[in-house]
Length: 132
Image (tube, rainbow, N blue to C red):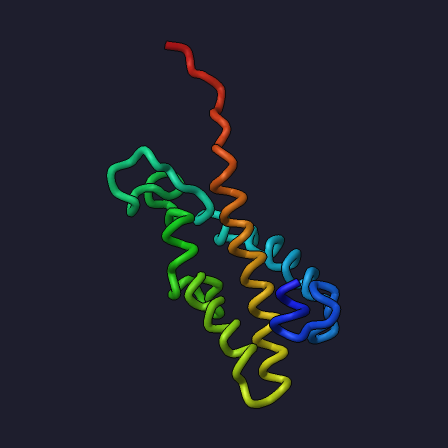
């Protein structure tokens, strides 16, 4: 509804931007977030005292909560801060091509952020118990 009424995207998530539907940009972002090295930042241990050690095996990866807010992830960055900027650019860029690219980036970034939320919402399985 909001996409149609507020943003003028008459087809909603079916709107095609840069030869791809917006829902496809979302899906691809979610899948791409699990690419090499990025998946190490998809864990969060809420029982540790410092979130700096709440990532995968303490500090092998950054806590997913911190990772999702880290504008220095890599280039391009898919942090919440960066995705909000992509959205602003999609609304305000002067050239249509720049607006389209920013809108595609917004939806890819949302897919990546949704992926982080899904991972954090799924507690890690415990491995086999070792004999005591």
